[in-house]
Amino acid sequence: MKLSEYDYKAIFLPSYIRKKSSFGTELWSVLFNKILPNEYAFPDARSLLYNDDVDSFVQRISQIRTAGIDEQNAFLQTIRQDAIVSFNELASLINGEQQNLYIYERLKRLGIGNVSLGQLTDEPEQISQNRTQIKELSHIIEAVRQSYKSDGTAIHLTYRIEKLAADLNQACDVIAVCEPDCSIDEIITILVKLTRRNLLNKGMWHFISSKTEVLTKTIVEHNSVHGGKYIANNLKEYFTIFWASLIGGCMIAVFALFKVEIESWGFSLLGEGLLFGINYALCFMLVDVLGGIIATKQPAMTANTLLTKIALCDSKDAAAKQIANVFADVSKSQFVSFLGNLSVAFFLSILISYLFIQNNEQPLVDNDIGTYLVKRNNIAASGALFYAAVAGVFLSVSGFIAGYMDNAVLFHRLKQRVAQKFSKRSVRLKLYNYVLNKLGKFSGSISLGLLLGLAGAVGMFSGIPFDIRHVAFSSAHIAYGSHAIALDWVSQTGVVTLASIFIIGAVNFIVSFVITLVIALRTTNFKNRDILYGFFIALKVFLLKPWVFILPVGFGNNVKK
Image 1 (cartoon, rainbow, N blue to C red):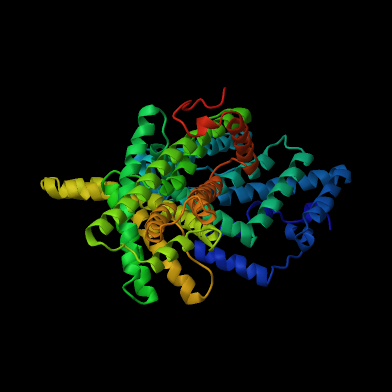
Image 2 (image 1 turned 180 degrees about the horizontal axis):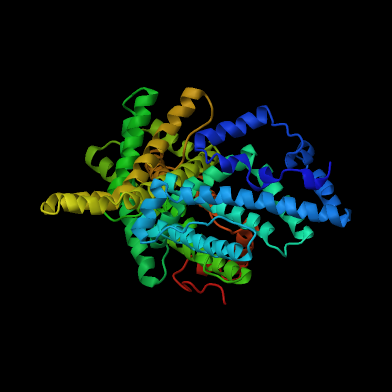
């Protein structure tokens, strides 16, 4: 068969675009295609793609280069006619997509009107006009994306905007074929590009990753704004974080004792897990209310801020240096918050144990419980290292939940609606505004508390080694336990137990930071190797000037420009 006799519309406008399907129908389509792939026959140009082998398609379509002049002209005429028909159908879909309720409402809020693509012909003026309209639509899409930080977003809005952007990207490639001066080589390149894209969109992994990206975009933009609050940019902010972490340490010492007490009540696994979760959640929420800081909750926010800052760099080297700078600032901020949390939690726990003995002439916890508390947090005597990694995963998850809820407050304009509803009730208005301002933090605290509390119950019930170790609570428990058994800190057990506190903290931080960073990377154009290059520079700086990762010096200028 001659290449000019094939129908190329299915390549220019594949079925997954034509259907404009929802998440559910897309998932069903991908699954069905995996189980029972479609079979294509002449004149469908997809029949040139044997067993989804792009190389076979390239080899077959490239034969037009050696064909006669009449066949080449016929091929060009067929391709351009099919491209024009496909573009017009795609244009109607794009114009209709702008009428989607979520997109329409956001454009109305931004004061932006719709841009409708016109019907395309082979006239150069029509092609030029539609190219201009495509550029205007691209600017509109970017304006909507930028509005996520100030006005929030929803999964439906993000999904539709990304769908519209993908359709617009397809339209750019299709209209390029319609250009009178588009050569055969350029047409072949575009056809191969579209074929690869169509195959990619049929894959299950691409479907999962693209939908995950939609979800993370709903959260990451807002988290990046809040994350900056946990990075010290000067000496004043450094000590502000320190004082706030002292508050967190005080609460942890008290609630860690409550957890030991709850464990002695003899509840069922589920009941005990729920009580543990409520205890954790109340501790985290109270710290938020008092303006304190829990060190391990910060990395899930600061990873997003790192990406936001390097997005402003105009070169790879500048971005790498910015990564090193931000990482050093994050490190010193984390260090001082860890210092405040752990020192107060540890020494206050010992003080509470000492005062209890003085007043009651008996230890706060008996020898068996003390031994149990020390052993379960000793990385050499238990699975504390793995459990610390599990806690790191939960810390990252809770950070995303907090970001999602903060974003929901913005998207649904809850503050404006409350202000309008209760404008004459100042007390109620202040209460609602306080809750809305704290909703993200409270949601993150509650979700983290329940995840941490129920982890042990899940492990016990399922019979698998599954639990958590949170550095702040571990330090308090070690303090209570060591005081009860009079642990010798210079002995081997004492040294390992003390080192366990810092190692658990490091694992909590690294796991939560890396998971959040990797997921946030999916919403940007950054590549993993660019981030690794930045961390490599940070490592070099650490070996030469380790103090800039701990002490309040060199804020924002840890690496020379």
